[in-house]
Image 1 (tube, rainbow, N blue to C red):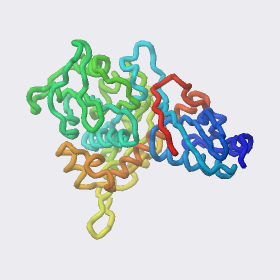
Image 2 (image 1 turned 60 degrees about the vertical axis):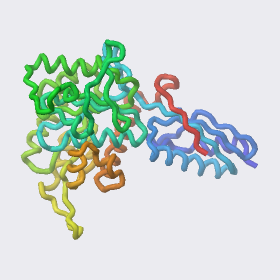
Image 3 (image 1 turned 180 degrees about the vertical axis):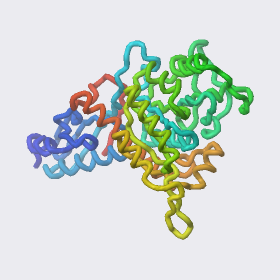
Image 4 (image 1 turned 60 degrees about the horizontal axis):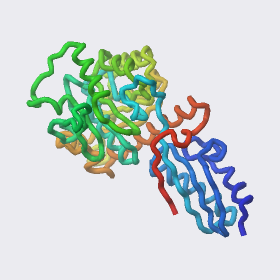
Length: 366
C-alpha cells in the first residue's frame, strides 16, 4: 500500500512541464492527498495549452504509480502570468500585449497576426486582435467581419467577435471599405488611444496588435502608453526585406521593446512532386533572429490556401487546422507562449503567479 510519505517523496522530483524545475519547489504543485490507493492532486499551470497539460499529467501519473497509486485525480488551476501593469495602463485587464511588426511592408504581418491570434485561441487562451494599421486595415477582410461596433453603456465600445476572438479595427468604422484615411500623426495617435482605453476588451490573456510597416508613430505610441510584453518580428528570407526589418529591430532596442521571437514568412514552397523550393532565398529569419538576439519561432511555407482563406475571411488555422501551414502557426504560438512564460518566470525570480492574483480556470483530469 502507498503512503502519504512515499507519494510526496515521488512527487518532489516531478518537474514542471514549462520551467523544468521541481513543481513543489516553485509552487506549481499545490496539494497532494492520498486515500487508500487514490491520489488527489491540485496543480497550477501558467497556460491552458493541451500540450502543457498532457506533459504535466504524464509526469505526475508516472510519479504516483511509482509510489503504488492506482487511481489519480488532478485538479488544475490555470493562471496566465501578467505584464507589470501600471496605474495609468489603458487596458489593465489584458495580461499580455504582443506586437506583430516588421519594418517592411508586404511580408505577411497581418497574415501572421491573424493566424497567430487564432492559434493562441486554439491553445485555450482568451485573446483579442487590434488592427493598429490605421492607413491600411486588413483585419476586417482576413477575419471576415463587417459591421460597426456599438456601445452598450454610451461609454465603452464593444469589440466585434468571431471565432472567439475580440477584434477592433478602423475598418469597422468606415462606411466604404475603399475609403482612404487621410490623417496626420496626432489624429492617428488619438485613434490608437481610443482603441485601447475606450474598447471593452475585458479580461484577456493576450491582445495581439497588427502594426503597420515602418518605424513611425504607432510603435512609439505603444511603447509610451502601455507595458508591452514583447514583439513578434516578421520577415521574409530575401535581403531586400532584411534591410528594413533590421531597422525595426533597432527601433525595438531603442524603445526597450523586448523581441520575443522572429517568424520567417514565405520561407519555401513544396511542389506536387515533394521538391522544396526556396523562392525568396534562404536564412533570412536566422539572420534577423541573430541580430535581434531572439529565437526563430517558425518558418511559414508558401501555401496557396493561406492566401485564399485569408481573402475569404476564414484564416487557414480556422479553415484547415490540420494543414501544414496551420501546424506551423500552432507551433509558433506554443513557442511564443513558452517564451512569454519563461521570461516572466525569470523576471519574478523563479516564482509562479500568486494564487488569486488573476483569472483562474479550473479543470479536472482523471
